[in-house]
Image (cartoon, rainbow, N blue to C red):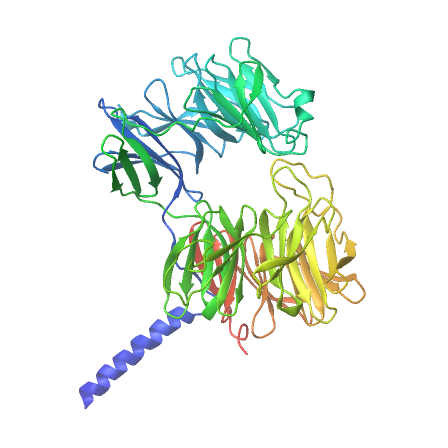
Length: 620
């Protein structure tokens, strides 16, 4: 009997220590890295440095450094090479000097890998333009130089592999920010697609180093080639010619003129020297087709990711914590009940911007296009698609004016309200109203705040109004036309805006808004503002211990408001409108926000973190 009691005592002590460690209040704790897949940016065929060929897979890591994986197409044997700089690269090409070149999106750096000297790894060649941040694409000129298009000044740059000379060839458009696509034609001239506010097509002559638009006034006047906005896309097809696409228009680029065509040859296939074709490639696998035999072989390869950057965190069914990584978009789930973390699967967007639970299911709305999806955790599989047997089921875009769905809340009549930033090249986001019973948008309001995005929303039941905050930012490639963000009220019954004001002069956004106890709280920078929905006036301004994190303000079970700043956690008594607790995080707060049983969950780069509120908060 004594032995039994001794073991029971030991077990009780162990259980108590474990429980105390798990529930210690006022403690920040890392829950690890939920996703380690890396974002696949592209794949090319190139020399392996030993007389043969290899596949080169280009991976980004927003919370770390990009890496290149060299894979044997016959065996799947892989070698990984990590870059010394840059989280990711859009541009990827096998150069005329049999080296592999990448162009980064953070600093517009040219990186180089020499397959003949693999031990040197990836080297930084340099920065061809001091003003640019992105190198979007490469192509090889007839002069043996590499040409690349850029952002944010829509430039063309070049690099000569023979001499090592880099050159900034200047802006291709006086106001546009993106030179997004390029291709070298048969004569050596470089064609570049411009956007997104006023799509343009520019030709650059390496002999004269001069460029000009090919879109004449007559062509712009035709249908689909107006100044309405958008990107012109250019690509070299299998016949060796360059083709330009804009809306429904398709043009062949013939030296200094354009010829409208009904169709274009297909894009060149990714071929090996022996004629085999790489038909598909993904993270960790690819398919090789032998046209002679008609047989396909799928091969796999291994690589090691450091962790994918967490973009948003939220609460889902069964009080589980859900999150999305960014480029790649992977949805993960953390279950506080057992401490288990699971990478559920991918969706084709860039990242989920907002999520909300609905009857034990979870709506996930992602960029681009504010595409709405519904995930059912009761189904033991992940199969993205639009068919009824898919999980999550995708319903398509929310509506016109939506690209980045920053805010999503429950409103009156059980409807869901979504606030978004607008598409590329446009100003003025939108607020959509989604009916979960029909799974479609039933109302959509563009320019609720003229030329501004909708970035935070809250429903205040006593007044019956939807309150929200705007941001001066527009879609990518635009410059704000308004000087200060606005706070507004929308009446769902009248279906119109009933109030708008700049609560804080010069503010550029109101990133978090929440309503409780007949009050509305919104944020600007490192300040929380109490707003009276009856008088439509600011009552009080409360300093915060850091800049408010986007959509990271909620209410615990005790009625206290809990929020995140870029530096940590705060708790506010909404009755007194006073901070009653703050805690500085040991890591920067990248994103939020989930509040479950008195525990705050947030992302810090690739890691999921939690903070357990002290006693008295988060409990009934």
